[in-house]
Image (cartoon, rainbow, N blue to C red; front, side, top):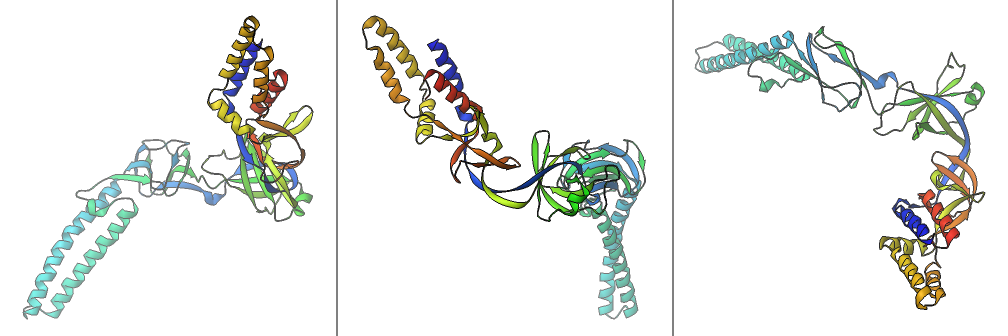
Length: 393
């Protein structure tokens, strides 16, 4: 039985690295209400990428759900109009070279008195006109993603690119479709443009203060939300007022029109010592958090790191030999008791007085005091095993 206990204890110690120690901090807690919320996106946060020229849709470089950045390739279109534009640009380049040569010749003749001022003006106007047409065409090509200076021959390949970061929502046009100019081909959702509409009673909404905080909970994940304003009309189906929040999400994508729980924190706000929700647990019928004992946690971590369980095996061997070799039976236990004077963690009874987001306001812990934020199950098991068998580190 003794060896079985030590084996179980050694298995628990393998998870000692899962214990996360953090410091309690002061946070603001107010009155909380819980309501349903819908994930939406404002019209200015959605984009439709279009083909600015008509042509044949050859291929997509993206698929629904793919993240794209500004400038990434979206699709390839074969465009006869682009072929004509690039051919015209090359032709204008050759005309410009000829006009430049004629202008230089006319200037030389004018200086020698062999050409009139009218002849010089005519060549200058002709050169400027061709140059203006070429520059205008170069600007149009550049806006289509074509580098004019790299054109050596006409091209009909138009690459359509993203104009901002986002998530591909839908491909709007099947492949090998003949497109007209300005045809939307891809729907793009900006990853930073998620909002939540919280549905709340009309009376509560009309008396809602401006300074409120929100946290959206969906599928075990939490998103902080910033309150923007009350929408000017109630929802027709639910007859509930609608509060608009901006979801302070990172790069994590959300599903539009999905419903989730919104936790709203509103005045009056009070400062309380806060610990993570994961730190709070029931122990012997009371709410508790675990705190590192003075010096015990460091000693335990160091002892566990160096494989301290071997000492137990040695003590067991001494005990077994003691039965036959006349050793003092209490010597090993005294030595063990001396080693276990310091327990790594202590139980601290607390009183929960509020909650918001991932934190619980508690009485019984001081600001800046260390506590076990994660790995509570391991610590609880460690303490229970220690009390049961007297073999805690």
